[in-house]
Image 1 (cartoon, rainbow, N blue to C red):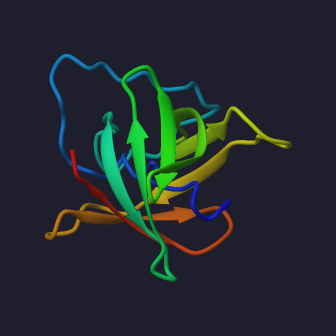
Image 2: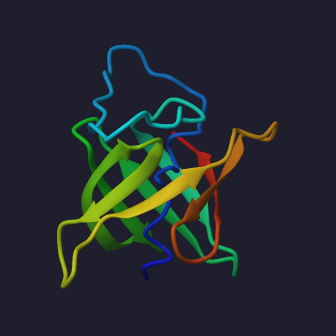
Length: 129
């Protein structure tokens, strides 16, 4: 399930390349110069596909909360942020609710990008709403 929490990251987000007016993005402070993100981190709904073909939906809200679902069932919820040029998700439930961070690739011509976690396999992400 940790692999599912990606993404979307969700990051998912950071590389989606679509901005939405009127929705300011707040960035967490980081020590030293942070790498520039590959695209705007925006609220929205994202489709995430893991390396093994597992699919999930991640919704990133404007209030910096997120919800992940698989087949309509919530599997995780928490807070998202851009930290040091990476997309980080911090679950609000469960034991050891530690932030998981993802490095997002530039947006591809087909509208997808890759979210690569600190540990685990990369995921393919696409903004769907």
